[in-house]
Amino acid sequence: MNNTLAAPVGTVLGLHHFAWRARDAEETRHFYEDVLGLPLVHVIKKDYVPSTGEYCPYVHIFFRMFDGSHIAFFDLGDGQCAAPSANTPAWVNHIALRVESRTKLAEMKARLIDHNVDVIGVTDHDGYIESIYFFDPNGLRLELTTEVASAEVVSGFAQHAHEQLAQWTAESAKRKAASQGVA
Image 1 (cartoon, rainbow, N blue to C red):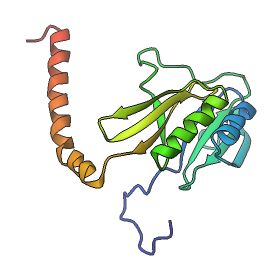
Image 2: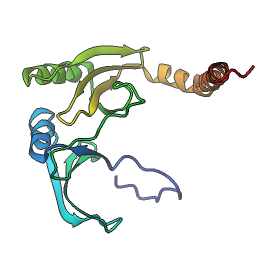
Image 3: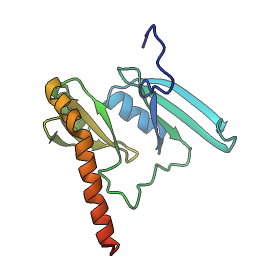
C-alpha cells in the first residue's frame, strides 16, 4: 500500500504471511504455484532459527497472493507435516483465501478437481460468503471464498455482531457450568 499518511500506532495493516509446516517443499510448491496459481517469490534457507538461535536446518518458502499477502511454509527436511490437534475437529482449523466472484470460485473448483483434489462445496454461509474446501498436501485445510452479500447486508451483520457474540458467550457459559455440575 502506498498511503501517504502513517497508520496510527497499533494499527494492523493486513496479513503479510501465514506460515505452516510442510512435509516436502517441492510438493508444496507444485500445489500452491502450479495448482492454485500463487507464484513462489522468496526462499529462505537457514541452519539456525533467527528468532531463537536454535539449530534446525530448514527452508522457508513464500507464495504471493494478488493483494501482496503471502502464504508460507517451513520444510524442516524430515518429511513431517504439522500434526492435527487431537482436541479439534479437522474442519475447524483452516485458512480462507478470497477470490473475486462466484465465477472465479467455480473456475477454481474445476481446476482443483482437474488436479485430482477432493473439493467440498460450494457451501453457502448465511448469505454472507460462499466457499469451497479442500486439503493441501500437508493436511492444511483451505477454503476459497467469495463475499456474496451486498454492502447493506454486510453492514447489517456488523450492527448485530456484538449482540450475537454476547448471546453465544452466555449460552456457552451455561453449557460449561452444566457440564461441570455447577448450578
